Image (tube, rainbow, N blue to C red; front, side):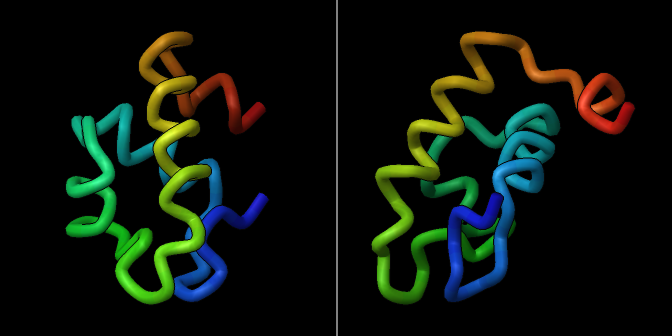
Length: 64
């Protein structure tokens, strides 16, 4: 699912970035451009960060 429509960033891209060390919206803005245009996605991107860190997202499992 797309989280940031302005920059075409998906939920999985955010989860991948978190698994690679992104821990904040600032990190996602720097690496993916999330919330750098209109900012409407900031709340949803933050939720994905929190869910991913709480569950320990594994991109290898998601790819199956």
